[in-house]
Image (cartoon, rainbow, N blue to C red; front, side, top):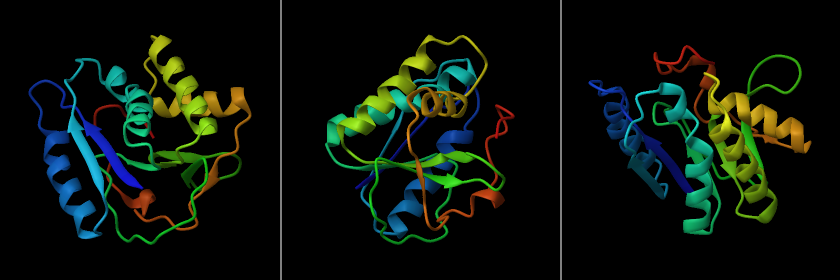
Length: 169
């Protein structure tokens, strides 16, 4: 498994590159294999977020192994091996299907590749000011896809600080 992320600073801001340096230190402290890269920023914050599924799909195809997507401003508090499944997410408190898209596991298999391809298409064809998270839900519902939850929240997600740019959850 490879831990992956990308970052893309809004013009004149170093928020994401600052977090990228800390992300690398954090992931290395758990001795995890990783890949992170800077992508040229689009001036539109929402377009940057909607690049996530295509990036994940590209990395799955490049590395041909499971990947764990971690947003660049999300910090591991702990880590332990877990059993792979096509898609695993961090469960948000509340009733129904509620997930965080900041930490997602993707198994390298056709089922997952098809799901992410659909997710990417929805993100790439929409002009709405919605993040990748919105289209993750749409994809899950359209494909009636089963997404499992991590047994343990390695990041304490509910108590993390998130990007001030999108006002999204």
